[in-house]
Length: 541
Image 1 (cartoon, rainbow, N blue to C red):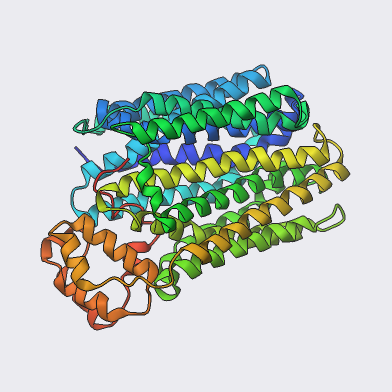
Image 2: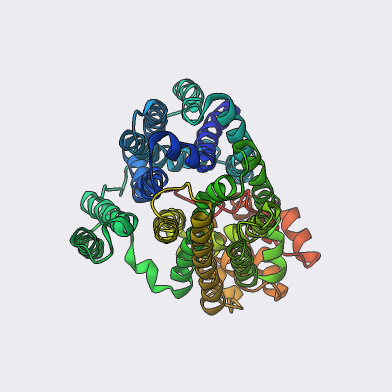
């Protein structure tokens, strides 16, 4: 088995999934024109993928543990390829939406299992950190190159080409997976929460229907009220099932931690604001400001590059200023960017929107890593994987609701079509005010509920660790996320850890002592966006 080939195969899956998401935003205007689709239909094109991905993400990891991670990975990539074919040949909007839902299902199966496969193949802590750093960096690469590639593909092949070009790459990933990736499973103690999963899908889908179709049906119409009421009933049923179930999909006890719950809400607000912007900004650039699709793609590039550059350095900022301040600053930058967009009129130069989106990209880069770090740091070590899965689910739920809610705000001002520039500007400005409000709420929650200082004693860390690197990781993460100033405890902690525990978190004794003697924070090595998502994971979900 060549581990480099395994990693290459898994990275292909991440790349095609993230490229699909970033490129499709750019195609919305042409899809609407070619298929005669209004705003609500375009919302479904986006949210069919987001909804399937968000509601099935946790179950995808569980199925991989039960029935084999390589098997689920291959099935997920095949589903993604099949959905892309359906999208590429879709004769109408309904078929396109169905294809998008199928690609979301494929991503929900493939991406969690790909991370678990890396954890299984790379047993050494340092090598695992590097491997997942490469895996995670594919997200940034896809975000950076997606707009420009999408613009070129749209010019050369039309919007159908952006779906079909994925298929051969997906099939290559399947062939490589069958030849290179070893099968693994961990069924012990794992159970499929079928009732909880069904209620979650039903509740979220009905909520999306009510929000997206509300402007067309009117908010007081019986279909809107019926879908909204049924959604509430299904989600309450979900909470009841999870509370009483022996093996719940979502352990509700985790939400007793206010910082953990706040981190998930902030994560939702972050993507609520961002995904609505990514959905509507290309429409505004093309329809209201007259940019061609290729130029619009290039106009989206500064935001993506700002995100990539800033996110790679967010760990250093967390080490210096703390997760609370970094996260709040990131959400504030996102709010400022959205607010700047909300004052742009039809006569405003497009460069103003580009500059505002760049500011939002800086904010997203600042907030993305710390919000997940706080979520993982606030739960027991054996729940770190679950916390990470819930964090990613919260992000996708925020994305789904952002497109649904702010898309409905846009449609309420712009109407159901996307052809009137003045109406589009009015709708875009209103939606960006909502985006700014969501990001501002996230900043306030970060300041209110994420602690300024950790108050962790070294003896508590020693007692909690009991020789388990996972517990020590949680305590280090908690400590560094909350208290960047008190270095004395960090030095005591490092000297208290034995060599095996250090190896498990990717450090040597020399590295640890050098960091302690130089009074340095370990945040860059533990919190770096390219590595922070993995090191606490003893079992990936």
